[in-house]
Amino acid sequence: MTTRCGFAAIVGAPNAGKSTLLNRLTGAKLSIVSPKAQTTRMRVLGVLMRGETQVLLVDTPGIFRPRRRLDRAMVAAAWSGATDADLVLLLVDARSGATEPVREIARTLGKRGGALWLVLNKVDLLAPARLLPLTAELSGLAPFAETFMVSAANGDGLDRLLDRLAAAMPEGPYLYPPDELTDLPDRLLAAELVREQIFLQTHEEVPYGATVETESWRERPDGSVRVEATIYVARPGHKAILIGERGARIREIGARARTELARLLDRKVHLFLNVKQRAGWDEEAARLRAIGLEDPP
Image (tube, rainbow, N blue to C red; front, side, top):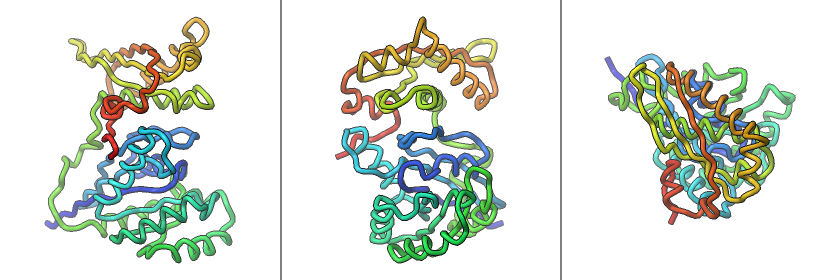
């Protein structure tokens, strides 16, 4: 029996739907999702079995012009994911089209070489007549070997994409057990689910000024787990917003994150959150390492 195994990196501009695509393809919520751009901050691996093929899907942060040390680490993680992969999928929000950031990413990928596919996402939200000109424009910027038109939200076009991904992976042994979904540590997963709720329940600059670290993970005799996490914020005002009146906001963030984590772990979770102000956390190498990023050069 011949097995196949390889890495396929999903790259693109912020808010193209990369995390939604990863979650839909793997059938599990591995990467957090919100309507806001730049939700994903690190590479997230999803292990997908398709017949005798193991496809290792890599969700990457959106590529944008960085300002902070955190931003530079996020963008570096995205390009590193593309460099290390056997195949790169450029995911484009078809509604937004060939914006200059998308064009710049396509040109850079084209210069790097390697197997490159174009995936137009959210095609269910615009007229089909707009898709062919968009495909032609982007294909003039990079040598895409294949093009796919999908909707990560409802699953349209994903069966063909999965079949082609499986066929494109190189022959070789599996790198992960077939029943494994991700290499993301549970402690990091817990922190990410808390951060997702911050994105969903707060507005404007608050989500981008916060990070979450799991401080304690204790297994309990009854099979449940006790998790303590700290939310670091850059400004006093952010701390007040996260805590809310009489602690209402932080309780709601904790309750929803706890529900999501318990569903993923399939066991009871006791989650306790603390909020601390730490000005300049997004410039600290230690904070970057804690959320799974390497300090950029």
